[in-house]
Length: 458
Image (cartoon, rainbow, N blue to C red; front, side, top):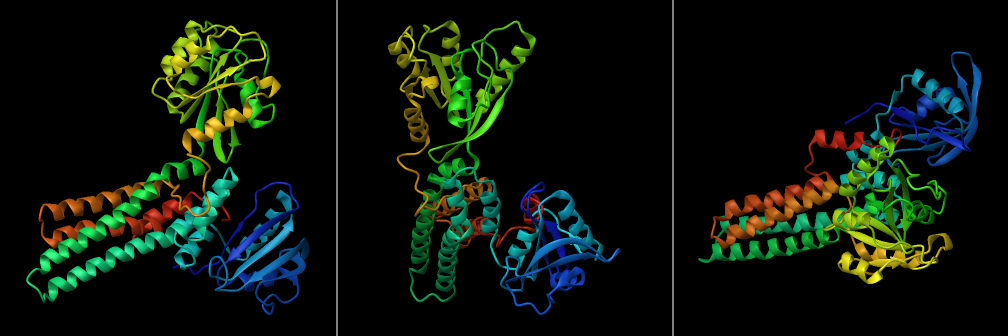
């Protein structure tokens, strides 16, 4: 267990109203007292904030005017003594304070080390710790709601409950085997194990069924906008983003590179990619953009395929329909404010029951219908982040799949009449896989790797 005192800047570097330097560890309050001019921090009550100045010991000059928060263990995030020094925002001021603290022998924190200490001291489990980063990275209010509920321990409590049920069942079977009172004890043990394995397997299956929705809320949908040049792809992106991020002109081939932007469509985060128009071209620069667009197409979760209401279907349009065949896409017929040249029946025939939405983007017509089609493609009805327990972390999803498979192996073993001690191996494996989600059975190397992905100062 770490016992030294660590420090880091806990706010984004740059200009702002305030910047915070955080310390955590047994010497956090004592060391801050040595450089603080004001009330004696050693005597300050816990969870209070004190006004004063930071003094540079090397010059005895005032380095910064600050407000210092004192929080004593164990009622802190890390369950250690924690001090937060509120400085004026700006790189010079906050870095000067950090340098003074480091000169007193405090160690610079590793990425995620504050949260890691909270985990190691039992303040939170591993799934809650990972939810901290999910909260920081949330792109929509619904993604934030899922992260907050995971931080609150909703997933942890469910996993702990399922693990406890398996543990109690294994214990009951062990007792029956060690102290048999009936001739049919083996049959009773098999029946008990099969019933409990099925119950827990079904619960894991429910979690996995909505895991895709949770993953979408956490990571966003990789969404490509495709279509021939000048059909309105950049206008579509600007409409969804509600800012002029892409250049819109009447000249075909204006977009020569990939433009990315996150947007929130009815609570669904889209990582929106505006691609170069896909067509045959002799322009070397444009051809590079077209090749990259084809690659983006293969990697996308959703494709927004834009057609021009004012032009008949072309050979390039037919090739695009072939390119998206078997993928998740929505057809958007744009420029309906112009004279119709497009055969809508033919479009619906090629779309093969995929959603077809008509828009006039420059007139802001059809945007609501498009947003509804996007949400309905991946979510049935409204997204429920209230009572539902979402699994959104890829690591958690994989472990749940392994835990479910282990229980199915146990159930198959029971059907084949395998000895109970062999069946229990599979049940125990499932218990261990679920333990890795909350950190009960996670290795030190896994824990180090997970927390290294956090931002510095968290």
